[in-house]
Length: 276
Image 1 (cartoon, rainbow, N blue to C red):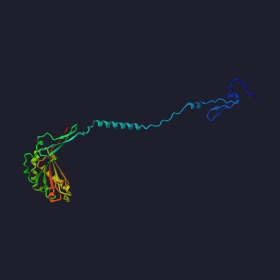
Image 2: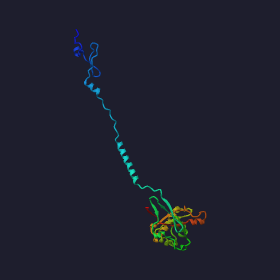
Image 3: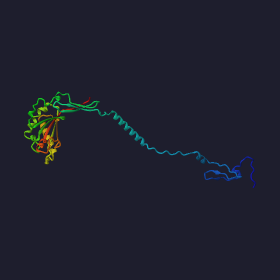
Image 4: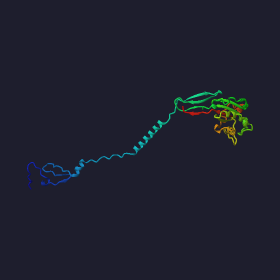
């Protein structure tokens, strides 16, 4: 069979040449070789779409709760700044001042130099007067000792005069001794009265008073109750027990221990807080 004759410069089609198309692995069709020349490849529609289409990369999921958390932290910081801006700073320039009392004692007060709080006695005529002025101290009797200190005026009374040994009930003559101080207390109605109970270092252990702490506090309370019954304003009164922790004499001898067994009534001047 003779080969067909084609015009010069033309390319025979696969059908005319009798070539059978063969399918490639990539979905493309490739013509069989003819005359030692490789024919052009024809791409299908699917292959052409795959050549220019690219799938977009999947974006990682963001954790949205972090934004809410940062917003809450920011709001908290703003609130703290606002609170600090409106808060009143402490004044480090406060200075202590001492005022000498007519009886020789001193009263400590605080003076503010750059704002803040200052403490000073009120402008009451009775407060500036000496409660002991015009009072015959010899009328207080030998059992009452008067001591002026920085904390105020102390009236020391021996426990032997007020209480039986190891007891906190006032003796029969104790009320008369305490009543001698009423004119002083009534002369300065704005002064506070602190009653302090003291003992020696001799231990005590009873069902009612297991130690000197209970005994000292009970004795101070008995004196406070007596003063209240005599008309002293209870808001001026306070009671505390110190046991043997504040001796004024040595506990090595009987005389010193007797001196340490005492009740002190401390008159303190009033202190008010004012803004400078």
